[in-house]
Image (cartoon, rainbow, N blue to C red; front, side):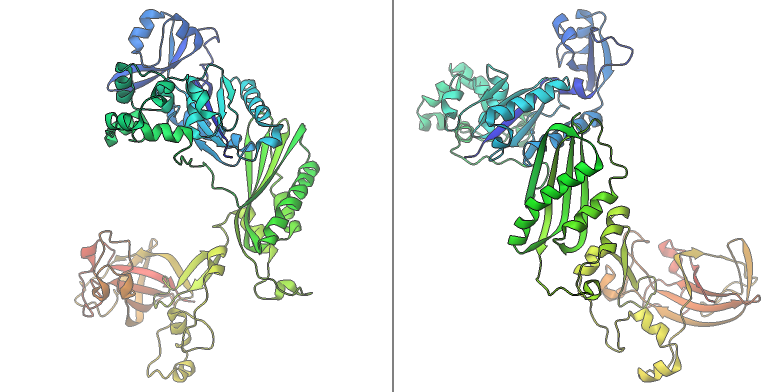
Length: 579
């Protein structure tokens, strides 16, 4: 049976954003937030609350009641990070942990809520009572007040944690209704308008609603909330009976876990903290002995795994291991993990270690060989070591594309994407080459003759600049035609006088990449897409050779067209250098 734990932490914002250093612990102080040009109390410490300061109260009224009240502006980003970090720590009890949208600590009051699906996990902590006891004791050790309840449904656990008599409650399976009867109707997380209407009718407890006729009750409270009212009430615009059915388990009530559910996972707890590298690695070996056989029986291999280290001070550190091909080699997992333990900070020790597989793919069986790494499709550990040490995007494989522009002819992909993309052949040569590479090869008369071309392709520069660099034209005579490059120009603070040149060679972008098809018109952002250019191979009087380009207005513009500047691009640019 499904078992849900709801955890609510009153004054979570005060714990996430402690009092100022210059304020004593016994001094009244509060967090404030500005709403509609009015500074109000977001949350107040127990000393300030005892003196009369309450959340939602204007700061001026609070200071009138508490003259020595200190105030600090709330930091929503800091509180949000603490909320997320606490939810990650709660995954030591179950991988299915969700943030409670009805209790965000950034709202006035500063309370934070969490929902845990602990189905099948309680026996790891000595039963359901043992799990709740361990959770509450650890959070109390941080100085964090907490209320927790376990029930069969998320809404029932939510109501018991907030409206129950005891701070920690564990409702036995199948006894949800008797536990909900004495609770107020606010335990169903209903809109304020519905609660007020029930109160006017004298229906103040869930037991009063259950005793009524469902048909009459549904007709009376069948109106739905508007979207704005639903957002303000932090609840869905459902009818009263639907909320009651969700609490009793008659309607499905799903939660959205903070982390995606792992395909395979195992966790090991310790009575005494561990902290040495040898003990952590041995723990990982034990976890792999439990997880990898499950993956192997499913005919799959590990593509991405996470080692979760839970420190005794409540912090959690995740070490992600990525592989470019599915693998079941425990030695490879251990070696990649060991390479990342150099900067590992275990604090005062670890009380739990977990191993989860977030991504597994089908793995085809193959015959082992003495030269296993030389066989196409086999796993290569070097790629995995580089990927895990430098990052998934830092290790890339250049892939050729059928483009005539050399800058567009190469695409750098991550190893994972490159291996997942099948290679396509380019007709005309014995091996896969891009259109720009073909142009380079066809600059040789013999290769051009073999390809059946009547003219040779223009040569390509040895060094291709990362971005086109504009030049300053210094021609004494204005350009009357775009069929030749400028006689003189400045580039990189040097003056160049051309003595010879060849061209132009027009290269157009792929028509399917243009927003207007083969017409090649510009996009809304002039620099977002490649454009048509006329290229020239030029040489200055000192023998330096450049690959220059002139921007065209469209692929169909005549040679000599000089309207390329209308798109906001440099008219003449240097694209590359020849030897």
